[in-house]
Image 1 (tube, helix red, strand yellow):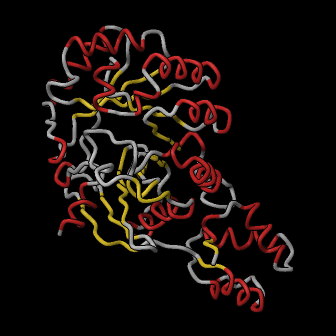
Image 2 (spheres, rainbow, N blue to C red):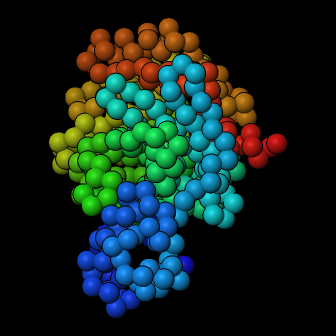
Length: 341
């Protein structure tokens, strides 16, 4: 059985053509799905015989909501979803002045092994399909009754480790016949898989890129992020500079501040030296404490002091806004806590 949410418009048209229908029927099915229709019976402009044939060949995937944590202060919602095979993933719905945003997962688990992250504790289970990534957004819209105009692929998993499915997802959500979310309203985060960054620059030059840095030296970054042993900082930063030159787009560098590890004035100076002259922005993130990691977070004041050092040296930086502080949890913690219970 085919999950129709996994298909781009062209793939949908090819599918219905293979069933003896004119290709425009594929566009009709595509449009119905992204209006939120979940039953073929409700696709009233399709012939009944075709709807029956389609139901024998395909389905419209959806996710089961296992748990929702709701912030009483700012409207943030954290979702725990169950996939068809029983695996679980998380997403976070956030409200901003510019509109609603969602952080979605791209894998069940993760194999990158970052030492401070809860999502990687049990390794990679499997990649998510395009439809499973997309269904996180649609489930959140159905639950909140609100449209979502911005997507960040920063949840569980390394998006560039699931590139083909990620690429299909980006094309589907951008399609004017579907959700019609602009490429510039999409952001993808990576821990620094250099060959895929280069491919991404060619395939999606308008999609925003965020790179997880978390250290200004190879010694610190390798201790926190094993990927740095394969793609060290010198090569990564050179690739990022080439990316900005090719696309003309600013890169956001995610930098999680860990108490006593990468939060000193020396670390800030090293970060300034590393990024000097690049079209970039640094997003400083006080660590969401993960009990299993043994790491501790920094104070908000220390994060602001670190930011000021960067700003004083010409590197634009912000400290991530504390959304949903009353439900604060690192990505992966809700899933792990459910598995323990």
